[in-house]
Image (cartoon, rainbow, N blue to C red; front, side, top):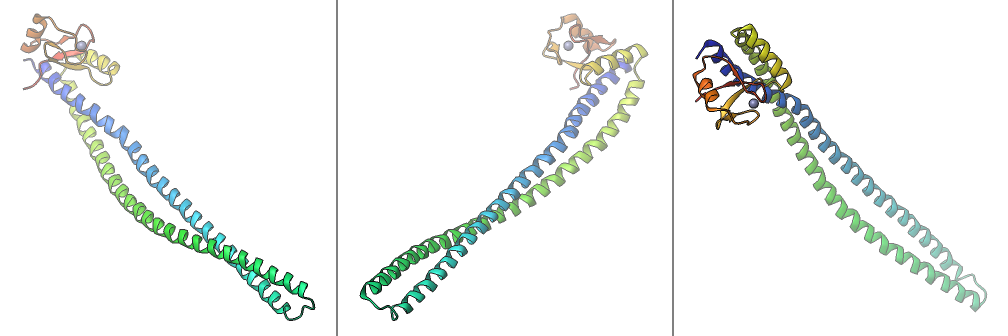
Length: 235
Ligand SMILES: [Zn+2]
């Protein structure tokens, strides 16, 4: 195997790893944004739940004030009982008091129902709050792991870049030009390994003679279909 072909074999490994790292580097910010979005949605939901609980409380307080008003009215009418002159007036007053008491009792029933709702809802909110806290902690942890992964990927990319530079220097100028051109047009992958008697990149079957020559590694051979330079896979 010539040194140039040996360099191509190594270069293929470097390129494959670089492409994988590029994918990681591109996807990490998205993943972090997704984590943030998830937590934000939960927080919004919590705000809504709290507002709803406040609404229940306001409604209940309003009804409690109405009950007080009714009680006040009932007391006044009960006073008036002693001042009325006729039986008719007295009956009308009793009727009025009964009516008010009925309304008040109805309201009191509603208040009890609201209190039960509030209690249930408060429990639900407490549970939701601990869920949110747990999700937040988890998201923070995941975010940290992703940031570490990103850092590692960037550092490795830098090392690979230097490695690539020294490997490219071992190529003849014509092969270097070919490599740069093909890699540029094929998403960074300018070298393919022979796999199952075919080009490992475009999967076109290769003639036996080509396969033999690639295996010997005495000269640089390109895939006639995709143009990538072919190498024998490392054991
Ligand atoms: Zn090919």
